[in-house]
Picture 1 (cartoon, rainbow, N blue to C red):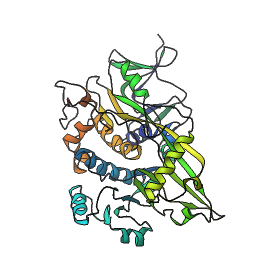
Picture 2: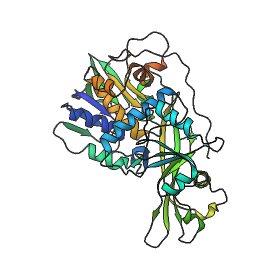
Picture 3: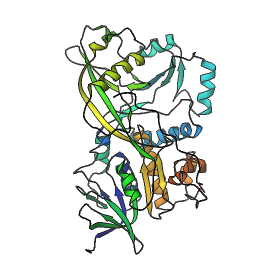
Picture 4: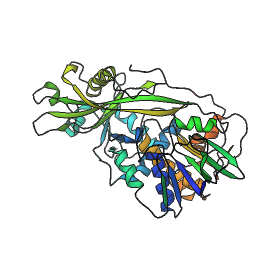
Length: 411
């Protein structure tokens, strides 16, 4: 067997997660090797140029709500100079009555002040944002070009080694080192510590070391519509982003008076087809009506042109999988980022770097990253029985049964 090139730390995957983790390690003075099957960074779902970022304010899992706030602050600190801060509005759900006091109390429990989240009734939203619906205004909400960000993070660096066009098919532990095998069946790299920052490929790599993870692909199609200058839709288009059942970015007025408007996205669970679909564009037209509360709008006026199709990866419990794989020392995971890659990548960079370097977690603790949150993200949560602590914070395994998302909304 040929002797592979050895590195102390290897990151598999050069999407936004892998790039952010590698950059964080470089900033901490570490030498890093990043390897990817493509010939450049951000070739798959991270080629997305319109990813949104905002703290989650729904009524979901308390841990999810706490995590997204922390992750948003980390993302804002990392990419605040690169992303477009246009703000995001989250309308009141159609079956709910706007209750300012109740909303304000809820936002306070999430530690979100008016600088981050502010309830607006319909008249206030119309005056401030041009949107005639009640809801919550998230003034620091933003969007980020993931491909541009990933490429910037992986610029030439004296301590960075990049292996492109190198598909890693399996892992194997040999004499205390992890061997990374390519398609030829020969090891091409070895490492003391391996960070797997891929999407569905993670499932195959983990299976090669007898670890089963409940991962599923979710296909999403983002539609880029054009709207004629004098069409009734033109007077309803938003000048801020909207996040609700689907999401949209602010509409862009072009030189000829027409508009370009990005709306998405479809949610096709269990599918990994990258071909564009007319049915997904139709689904996004319907979402556009709902986002603007414009059910009488003629959807045929939204002319589909370009689109973006990405395959997201989700875990059984809809939380990301971030942290040390305690059953296989030296392996760390950053996967199942779903539709929140901007947030979870920033969080993964801090958490995994702290684990790889065996920090005392003081910084993460100051940011509110408590032991239960580490446990909520840890790979160990999918394995029954008592497991060793997942980190210096003493995260424990969970025996909860994973629950997958509901069926696809667009075909």
